Image (cartoon, rainbow, N blue to C red; front, side):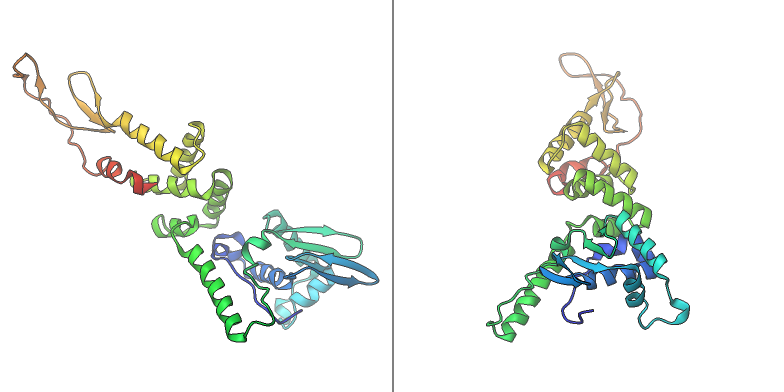
Length: 284
């Protein structure tokens, strides 16, 4: 295995099912390390195989040998088991496997998105400039994943520890609705004190039924929802704000005199809707 170079490991891996299985995680990192970073040719016997970035060639025997290199006898994993784990990674859509009678080509999913960070540098560029360029590229990637636009990090900061089950559900929601809308729905859930993905999913489904496709559409739908629920006059002159009622006097006559005492009803709870109104633009 080529010992030169490096790979990027996205923080999302902490919310992936492989994170809870050390041996499966090792296999995934092995795959990332084995994949080529550039187009190249590899000989398999007398056959020439063209590989693209993110691909590598393996088989059950070579996988068993390289995975177990340096491992204690008690930690040895048979090739048959390793290949079953590879199929599990394929089922998780982390890679694809294309097999022939002699070898298999493994392709890492979304390799270009996560691994290619301007790794090809001019050989004429001074070493210091190359190092600075590499550091800047890495910092740019880290800044991208450290901001509040990451749904997984937002969940753990505001909802709590993300279990493997919820991590998978969150991934599905992102795939179905986009990460931008999932983040918006999570913020709506927070303001309504519903810190669970079931509520987030309900918000997203309501938005989809309303034809929401962008964050601007979501803002419009939420504004209309708030407008409808802001002031609803009920029988007897009681004004309802959302699900909370306020005590108001009932008036009659041209001079505005009170015809009866105001009815005693539950007090309005400040913050549930007023804060939501004031922060609607910031919210989503």
